[in-house]
Length: 65
Image 1 (spheres, rainbow, N blue to C red):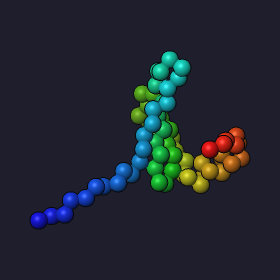
Image 2: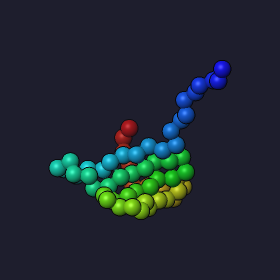
Image 3: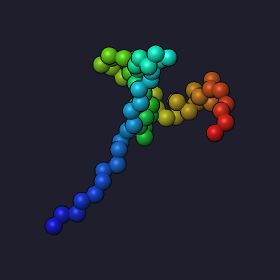
């Protein structure tokens, strides 16, 4: 008898919407980086987690948890 198990997700997708709930793009978070795709695009734009972290530390606004 075979053993069954759950396969962990390799990414999480999120829709980005505007004030009228219209989808303006998608973000995909992966262990290796973050990807962005505008609405109806067939191409994703991505950065590594290191590049993402460096950019946010330099340009991001500090937030409370």
